[in-house]
Length: 462
Ligand code: GLY
Image (cartoon, rainbow, N blue to C red; front, side, top):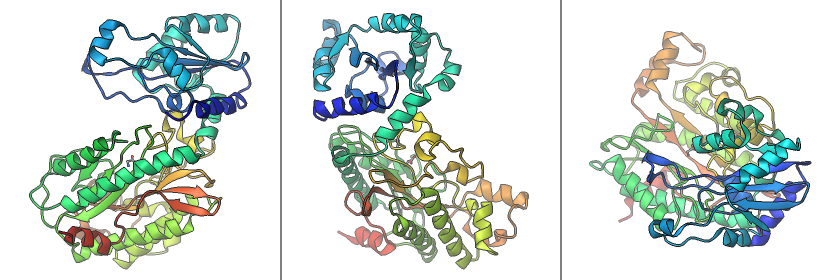
C-alpha cells in the first residue's frame, strides 16, 4: 500500500467534490469459477483500492460526507477461514493502513444505509460491473440490477474520474514498474518466436515474467499469429514460417497499476519485404502520433492524424485511393484500422472504463457512431498527469473485406482487387505507454524494439 496519508488526502479531495450524503464503496468479493470454492484470481475494485486501499475480498466502505467520517465494513476471518487462507490483516489493521477512523461488522452496512434512506439522505454509488455487487446493491438499496447503471451517481462518477485521471508521482512509480516488467515480457516473447512453437509457449513465457515480478497480468494475454483479430485470446495455433506474431500483453505492479504494450514481429528471424512495408506504415503512423503529443492537444486529433498517415501508406501500397482527407472523414480507412489509437491507463488497463468511457475519455460528450471512430476510447484534450497508450495498427480482416466488398462500400477509396493479395496477411499493432507532463509526453518504461531493424536485431541476438 501507499502511506496512509495518501489515502487520507485522496478521500479529503473526494469529500470536496460531492456535496452531501453517503458515498458507498463496494469492494469486490471472491467470484466462483466453476464451483464456490474454486474462485477466479481475486482482483479488488480499482476505485476501492484508490480511496480505501484494502486489497482483500468482501469489504465495503462508506464516506459520510456530512459527518466527515469514513467507515470500513467487514468481518475478521474466522479461525476456520484462516485454516485455508492463512492469517490476513484484520479489519482494524486495514483501516489503520488506510488512515480510516471507523470499522464496523459487515452486517451493519445494511442498517446504516437503511437509516440514511429513511432520513432521505442521498446514497451515492458507482456503476457496479460484477454480478456479486449487483446483487449486493439489490439487497442493500432495493434497486434492480437493470436499473443500477442509470441510478449510479453521476456526481460520484465525475468526482472519481476527476481525481483518478491525473496520476501523481507515487502512482507513476508504480506504473513505471508495471511497464518495465511489461517490456521484459515483450523482449522474451520477441526473442523466443520460431516455427514449431505454439502460441501458448509464448503466452506462458510472458505470463511467467509477470508473475515472477510479483504482480499479475493486467489483462488476458493476446499472443497470436492471427493479429487481425483485435482481441484474440486463442493460444492453440502453431507458429509457421512466413507468419507475423502479435503480442499484446501487460503486467500489473504489486499495487495493481497496469502496463500495456504490443509488439508485432515475424516468426522467422526477419520480416518478409511485404511484412516490412506494412510494418513501416504502422510505425510511421505511430511516430507521427507520438510527435503530435503535447499538453492540451485533443487525442481525437492525434487519432485522426494517425489514421491519415495510415491511409497515406496504404495509398502507397495501392490499397487506398482518392482523396484521403475525405476517406478518413468518412471512415473508409476503418477497413484497415477499426479501433481507436489508444486509451487511458492506470489502476485499470482501460482506466476507469467501469465508470463510463464518455466520462473518462470524452468529457461527457457523446461518442461518434461511425465504424472505427466509435471505438475511440480517448478523445479529450491531454492534460499533465494523464497516462495513456498509443497503439496504431493495420488489420486485414477477411470477413470485413468480404462484407464491404459485397456492399460496394467506399469503392472510391478502397482498391478491393489489390486487397485480395493481403488476405491472410494478419495484423500489425505497435503500442507504447506515455504520461503527459507540462513539458510534453514522456514514454513510460524502457524502450522496447520499435523499428523493424530493432526487432530483427533482437531476434539475431544469440
Ligand atoms: N491491450 C489490450 C487492450 O487494450 O484491451
